[in-house]
Image 1 (cartoon, rainbow, N blue to C red):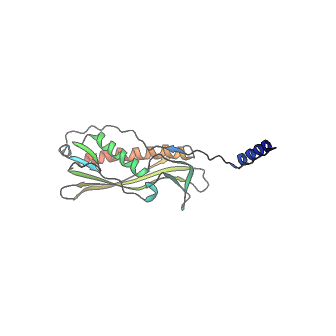
Image 2 (cartoon, one colour):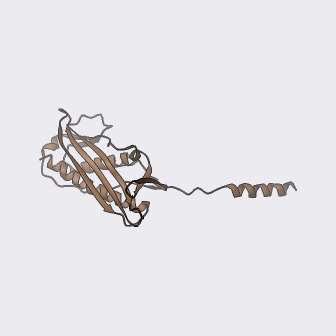
Image 3 (spheres, rainbow, N blue to C red):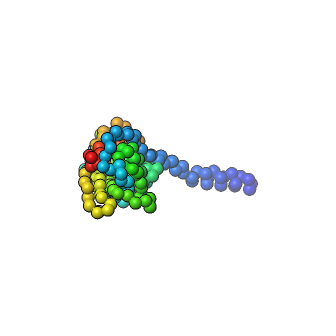
Length: 198
């Protein structure tokens, strides 16, 4: 009799458990194309890339999306492997290194002195859906400011915007498009740095 009660208890407790769906993590990554610049005025300087400025939503691993003109929501089964703020800053550093415009490119954690500082303000990095969810696009907007470290004077500042159509109307489609949008911006950033190093 005691054995039967144990079996019944196992079935009852087993029926109360629910399976929590696993969360898929996505990375922010881009291809860095090495640019060929002639010897420039920046090659005697080192560049320090400070941690990007952004809204609080880009400082967490939560993956947000916009629906229509006003609504913003978050994917429940998808998230970033690393916060966009940190991941985008790392990609900016890699792209600046790939230009070979500077003697060295360091992160803000480096204790080495630098001749120039690069600031980035991530104004938008978001997947947008139409109100009827029939179409989607990714939009990235980043403002870069190049600063002379010695005088603290702004050398130049420019905003880059990239909008990429999402082919698959889900989180993965948004990630692919956002990575492409970031890649476009980083390519433009590299050219802009080259123009400021003539």
